[in-house]
Image 1 (tube, protein in one colour):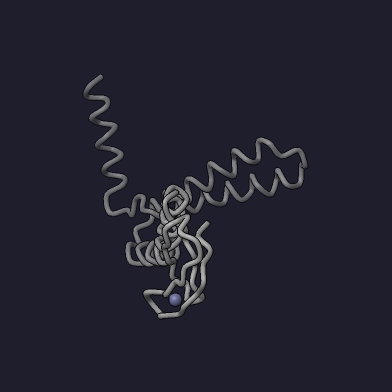
Image 2 (cartoon, helix red, strand yellow):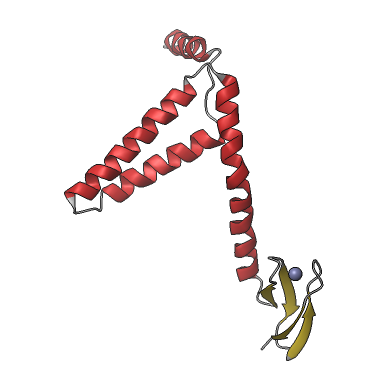
Length: 141
Ligand SMILES: [Zn+2]
C-alpha cells in the first residue's frame, strides 16, 4: 500500500511539475464555486438554477486551467490583479469588525475617508481629523 501511495504521489508531483498550482485567486475561485453551488441548491427557479450552475462550472474550469497552466508569468499577473482589489477589501472588513467590537469608542468617518475615533458618552466634542485637519462637532452619547 505504501508503495502505491508513493507512486501516486510521485505521479501527481511529476504531473504538477512546471505547472502553476493554486494561489490566492485560485482559492477565491474555489470558494466562489462552492458558494454558488450551495446557493443553487436553494433556488427554485429553474432558469436561475441553470445560470448559477453554469457559472460555478465556468469557475471550476477556470480554476483547473490556471492550476495546470505552465504560463507562470500570466498566472502571477492575474493573481496580482486580484490582490490589488482584494487586499484593501479584506483590510476594510477586518477594520469594520474591529470598530463594531470596540464599545468604548465611537467611530466617525471624515469627508476625506479617514476613520476618526472618539470616546463614547462624553457629550458633544469637536473632532479634528488627524489626516486632513477638518473639524466636526460630534455627539458621543
Ligand atoms: Zn479627514
